[in-house]
Structure formats: C-alpha cells, structure tokens
Image (tube, rainbow, N blue to C red; front, side):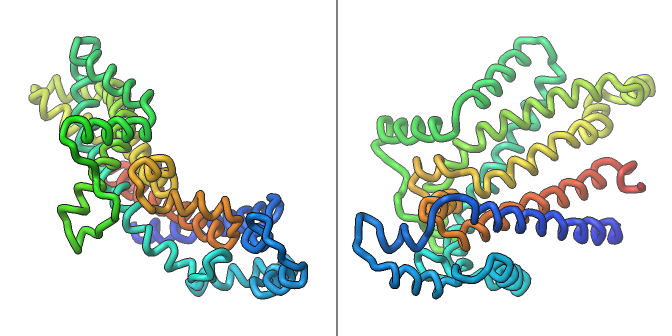
Length: 317
C-alpha cells in the first residue's frame, strides 16, 4: 500500500506541472494588463514612464520563460509572490479566506453524506414504490434548484419568519463557535442540498445494480438476514461510484462557491477568484488555479485509497 501511495504521489507531479504551464501561458494570451487597470482606472492620467516603471517593479518586463522560471521556483519553495493588485503576499490573501471556504465545503459534504446515503439506500431497496418516487422527486428538485437561489430563499425565510438574518461579519469557529455556525450553516445547507441530490441518485443506481449480482443471490441463499446482505455485502460496493462523486464535488466547492458566497456575503476563495480575474492579477490567479488543481489530485488520491478500504480486491492488487 505504501508503494502504491508513493507511486500516486509521484504521478501527481506531471499533472500539476502541466496545469502550471497551461495556466501561466494562457493568462498571458488573455487581453488585459494589471498595471493599466490599476493605474489608469476611472480615466486617471498616468504617463507611460510610470506604467513602464510599475511593470518593471512587478517583473512583467522580463521574457516569459524567465517569468515562468521565477514563478516555478517560488512554487517549489512555497514562496507564491506578491499580489499585483494589493502588494500583499499571495499566501496571506489566500490564508485569510481558505479557512472559511474549507469549513463550508466540509460542512456541505457532511450534510450530503448524512442525507444522501440513507436516502439513496432506501430508494433502491423500495424501488418503484411511493417511497422511491418521493426520494427521486426530492433529489431531482435538488439538481434543478441552483444553490444560490436556494440560499436567497433561506435568507428570505429567516427574515420573514424569525426576523433574523445570518451575521455579516465572519467569526472563526475558535473565537465564537455559535456565531460561526450561525453564519456558515446556511450556505452549507444550500450547497449541501444539491450535493446530497447528486450523491443520493448515484447511491440508488449503484445499489440497484449491485443487488442484482450473483454474490448477493448467494448470500441470500445462505439464509443471511436482508439487513446483513445490504449492509455487509452490497452497500460497500455500491458506495464506490458515490465516493468518486463525493470527492469531486468536494474539490469543486473549493473554488466553485462564487455566487453562494455573494448571497451570504462570505469573503471566501470563490470571491477572491472573481476579484483576481477582474483585476488581471496574474500571480494570484495562478496560485488559486494551482490550489484548486492540488485539491483535485489530492482528493483523487484519497478516493483511490478509500476504494481499497471498501473493496479488498482493489487493496490486494
């Protein structure tokens, strides 16, 4: 198992390197100059000499291969550089926001797992019954309703029914757990509903397929209780595709909560992504893309390891 983990970690390097190359050079093709946007915003009269000096200070006057080499050297040494817009270290810009986004993503994932696995299992076991139709209706609604719109409905419902709205200022969980949860539980619910709908439908279809396998019929022929057949023999294999969906959706939430963060006034990674793109802050965009790419490859590694835990055949190979 350790050899497999080491091999997968080594294979992550070419993937991240490819993402770095594509991100760096594609950003240089996109129209827009952070210096022009920053200094000549609102029609400000700035001479070309000032523009050239600022570009030289940011290192934008160097040849592209030199800029790429400097950036890669910084990635290896965990020196992500300074934001072209604010002048602050990129790691500080991300650090003050990553905790909020990770907490919302983890809470949404927990909500999704706790809801989706029981609903998907019940729907599969009572296939084509009124229970199945009810669960399918709930999950289809979860896929059809955008998370940001559900978030708006939640905020309006809280204001209308309880004359209360979630706090606007972010408070860390360590400082005040109650204030933290009262602010972040609602975006987690809004995002987790769609998350749960996707996972529940995957669990249902996988479990229906697994329940028709020969080893399930053999287990029943041996006289095992139906609950043991489902829990011990069927559910583990049925969860393999669902784990893939759970992992990919979790990685997507790191940078995909843009509109939901706007609805709940959260200053997370999604909003930082939008601000960086609007300002053509290449250094910040590059680091954010690498962060999301690293999350995806890391989650894929964890998912593969969970495959081995749930299915001994994969572990033995």
